[in-house]
Amino acid sequence: MSYIKFAGLIILITSSFVLKAQNNFMTLGETSFALNHKVSKNYSLNFATRSRYFIYNNQNLQYQQQQIDIFHFSTIALNFNHDLSLGIYYRNRDLFNTGSDEVRITQQFNYKKQKLGIRYGHRFRAEQRIFNTKTVFRQRYRFAVDFPLSGEKLDVGEPYFLSSLEALLSLSKPDKPEIDQRSTAQIGYQLTENLKLQIGLEYRLEAFNVKTKHNLFALSSAILKI
Image 1 (tube, one colour):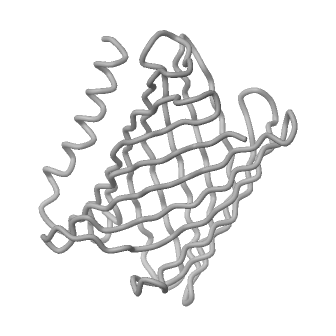
Image 2 (tube, rainbow, N blue to C red):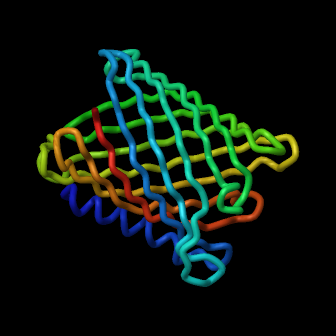
């Protein structure tokens, strides 16, 4: 199977999940812009801002801003395949009357390996989500693949594909444990040597051990390396 056919299959599978979601279903948009800077051989910085908004809610098409996110990660490369990151994140929902603001601290371990033009990644995260009334401790594991859609090496002016599956466990004192699952498929384009553009879909099955919510996200992002 060619890379393009495989990418199309993953996108079809991701989008087909929503056909099973009869209740508690929403569609949201998420637009982000990220800046990546390599300070030294082993140390890099990432800054990003993200906007999230409702597109389909309560069985109606609508546009409503949900939140604005700002976050930063500092990453130390242990070697070519392994790195450690520390992140801090701020989410503003009070401004839009859609919920509580949030401050999040993240510890991350990432392992990646490349073979025959395909890069495989395993990401482990521990998060402390600090809200006005509680703190949620969330553990996350993500498996991801990405590869160029033309040959084995990504060049300027060429597209690429990336997909991931992620499991999440949230624990807090006042609430029952919650288990989430996320599947993502995106197409990217290497516009210049330092700029990438990406669009795609993410399906989230949230709190399916308590009261299942089905959310489909339309993703768009720009990633600039400086």
